[in-house]
Image (cartoon, rainbow, N blue to C red; front, side, top):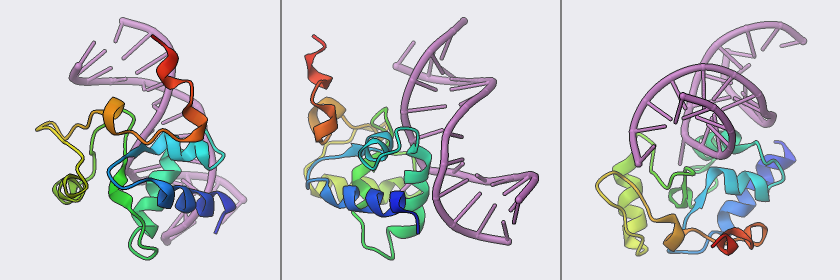
Amino acid sequence: MEAFTKNVMARIREIPTGHVATYGQIARLAGKPRGARQVSRILHSMSNKYKLPWHRVINAKGEIVIKDSDRQKILLEKEGVEINNQMRINLKKYQWMSEDMDMEWMEG
DNA sequence: CGTCTGACGTGGT
DNA sequence: TACCACGCCAGAC
């Protein structure tokens, strides 16, 4: 298994309950800014085996895009994350602000 | 090895 | 805001 893959799993475990992170965010934290797709692959193949909080990872638009979206929606709602009918989450409100993103909210 | 496949991101329209 | 095209790169085969 690649070091990157291990990093990704470690980062996913750091996502706090009640918050979400995007695939790209996890990829950056794990050292590969362009590795978002790999994060999705890792989730798909390892989340079961390694018991990862896979439901806390969504795309950059704040949407749940997987087939089993209802399952993910339920898991997130149990943690207090609001999701609308379009399977969308308010990232401003629920995104996990990890160390590499401390400039995000300075734009205004 | 070479080729294909995504639970994605970004920039252009 | 929504949609499209293209780049990305670890695994499966």
